[in-house]
Image (cartoon, rainbow, N blue to C red; front, side, top):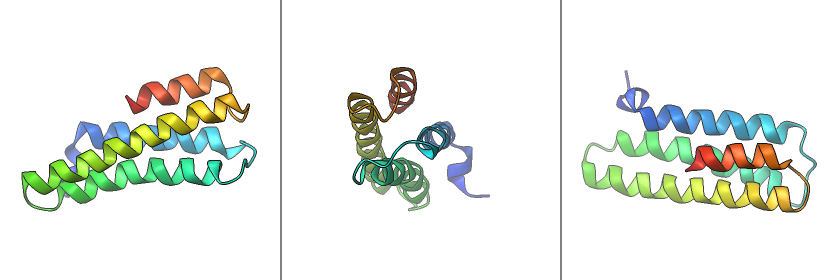
Length: 100
C-alpha cells in the first residue's frame, strides 16, 4: 500500500476535494473559476501523494509546499466565488477553513 494513504493530511485533502466537488456541482460557471477551483483542489491531493512517493524528505517537503500553495489558491477562489455570488457564505467559509 502506498505511503500517502496513511497520511492524515492526504485524507484531509481528500475531504477538501469532496467539499469543492459538492459545492461546484451546481455552481454557475463564472469564466474559468469553477474549473480552476476543481483543478486546484485536485492539485492539493495529487501533490501530497506524489511527494510522499519520491523517496526522500527534501522532495516530499517541496511537494507539500506546492500542495499548500494550491490550498491557498482554493481558499482565495472560494472567497472570490462568494464575493461574486457563485457560492454562499457558509459553503465558502467551510471550504476556506478546510484549506487551513
